[in-house]
Image (tube, rainbow, N blue to C red; front, side):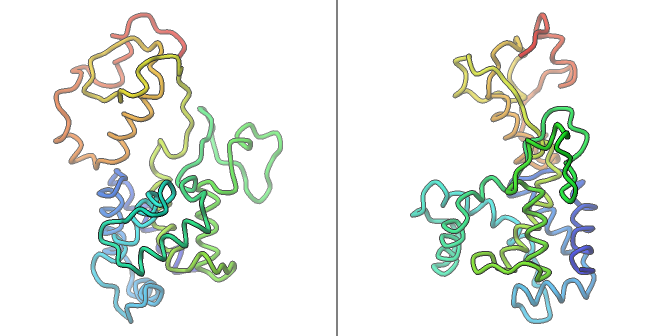
Length: 252
């Protein structure tokens, strides 16, 4: 219990570096590993079977596994760069046993939700309750902890895999777009054209899902320090004032 709380505390306090995607996940995990106590590092080393030492980059490698195996959900015969034959087989078996794993990364809470419903004492009148799922990010963090602490055993969900998921989901849950719902008109013909920060201002009518897709790519996959270098010149008055240039505000 102490070991897991120590790991979770470090993840939470270092996740302020922002970013997700592979670069972000690896960066946060590297910071986590650098702040582990000797006893926590030793306990994790036992799980990853590296003796008493935790080699550099271990948590970074583990933290991206849940995203790497996503490809197998769409195509069980896909290959993952850098994976050995044994690692590919493990990944395929995990995805086959947990085909809904792509839903574990987020929870679609409604706009304005002030909290996540109490799991121990759910209130049927809580308006956010219908938006939760037993396979959402909060539930799966709990399940990963249960597996690591031995309260739950699963032949298809090992402690090593639970460690990967705990690292990954504890980072994901700090991504605003992983814990909220967005509602957009789907009547537009722009669904295949991602909306990026570099796009010129335009009317909010029928902006469609492109916001969710395009903006997510920018905010979710690129660390802040690199995001600014990769972007071209943006609207000069900033994001918070964009709506003023879009003409008459209307509900989307």
